[in-house]
Length: 257
Image (cartoon, rainbow, N blue to C red; front, side, top):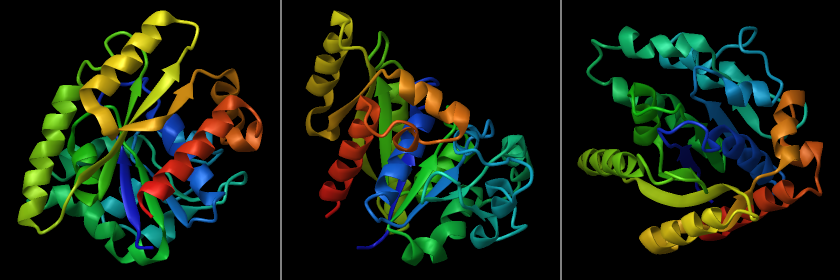
């Protein structure tokens, strides 16, 4: 199969972007897919969740600033088979450092172009904003996966994100490229709360087939796993969250088969 580059994005914080990025990457790797996870959040939560050092390794900021190539920045986490490019707070300066660069939205796309043949999936964990870092991910991506928590105001801000995606789609068509919506992933479902199911139904009514069949429930093991530097499957392979991320990985592989 050809490489699929997926940006995991939502400008709202706390919707499960990093948890999804880490655990989906790990689950895909466990299906014997070649996976590269790129941490694009200056907070480096994905890097930390896999027990990787933010300052001893070359980072995605070094790559985007032309100081090294992707291959020089690849790390190998102890508890997952996916490759990772870490981030740190220096990435937050990208907006200012590239302000005079007319092609700054294409930095990431150019950086990963020669690595597509080496991977089946490149997963990008985006920051909770619609700034230059997220724009870079959307221009580099083939598709975007949007996590939405099953909570009040879940759809708040989603319209703005979808409008941004439409703008990028129009501009990418000029470049003879495309950007699809991989799917909307419902996260943090508390099955005991009636209002959570109301949100599920509302989102399914609004977005139909764009919503993944897999839903990620609230799970304590999934919350603890990153504190010990492990994806949830490595930490608690039989817990519901582990099974759900495996299901999500299989669903994505099937959809791209």
